[in-house]
Amino acid sequence: MRKHFLFTLVALTISAFFLNAQDSVSFSPEQQEKILKRWIWYQPSVTVALKGGDTLVGQPIHFNMEEFLVYSSDSLPLGMEGHLSVIPVDEIERVWITRGGRITISQTAGIVLGIAGGAGLGLAIGGPVGALIGGNLLGVGGGFAGKAIYRSASNEEVCLNPGSLDYEKDLQKLRTWSVFEDSLIHTDDLEKLPEYSEAVRRAFPKKHLRITMGINCRLISSMEKSVKEVIKSSGLPDGYKSYGSPFGLEYLDFSWRLRPHWIVGGGFMRELGGLENYSYYSSYSETTVNTYSSYWVDLTDFRFYTEYVLNPVNRFFTTNSEFLFGAGLIISLPTTSYDYSEYDPLSADHWSVYLYEKHTIPGIQLRAAYHIYLSRNFSLSGGLEANLYQSLKLPGLEPPADYDGEYYGFRDHSLNYSSFRLKLGAHLYF
Image (cartoon, rainbow, N blue to C red; front, side):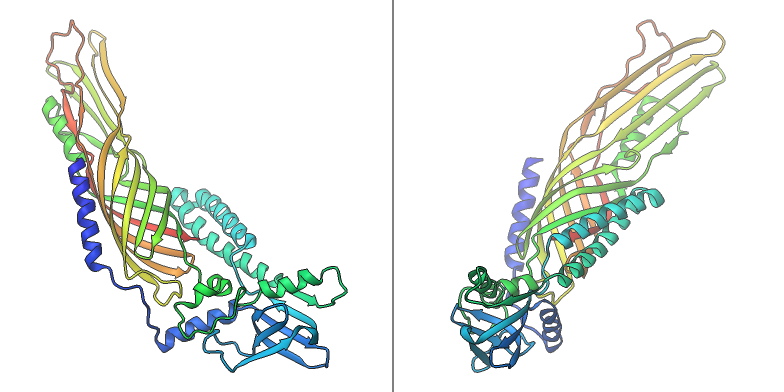
């Protein structure tokens, strides 16, 4: 198992090395227009009232305690040489400044409250799946509402009065809220612009944290075959009933994008209703003995994985989809429970044997998924995963010492939990 896992990771790394393309991005006219629209929403802006009575409106580009540089355009701060208005500080009477959008406590609170409210409503209406869908959708809505509330409260008026006790603080506000806080930068390279400006980084943030909730369904499972073989080896009749659900719920999945192409993470997966749940009943008229047997297994996984991203979504959001593939390690905690009993209605003799055990088994996972981003903070995905587990050896059930009949109980056997799954996910990004 360890050798297979190491081989998988090595193969993934080599493939990613050859597939890895340069992260440089070229922008089409349509993409440039989309980027500009976002910058217009997020850019800081000022209205400067001069002591002589004139007014100037634009972007606060840089403030150096002596001069205030204002760009009288909504465009991105590129190629501004010769287009900046230089205003001496002693000529400024009053400044109205708007910070522009950013993720703040208001937006974060909106997301958290939206998830909580949506999950509660969805759980009441549609169970776990409803909680998953409702929590994500209302979480995104709450985030937008929080951002709008913040923007409406982000306007501030600064009156530059050298005799005021707040004069130094007001000067610092103009410096902090400018596009270039530390020094004036002239560049025509949009990709490098975020390196120099906190305001640009706020408008076009890199998303590192991903929180995932999802549901998966077994398409191919070794478990049903394993259980049928156990039943067949015991000599029990072929007729049986099967219960349970093929679905599993994935939650508490957190991942971190280390680099544009690489993601590491871990999560928790719980089967809904047991992996396979069988109940068997048979009656032998020639012996007038009723037999009953059941076999139940449950599965809980802790998963740790690495993913490689082909053509990742960049900070400027010029594409809204990406393909990921990866591999990981699984620590599985399956539970097995099986029993066998006989009852003779003529003599009222009855006996039963029972076994309940919890286990820990390792496994590896191969995974691939396609993500479609509905916004910078939210995406939906569909994917496939192959989960390969180490076989689990289990003891049989022994009849009572004085039993002299033909015993149909379970013998020593092995179970294989390996499966091939389809999964759907919803993701939040921060």
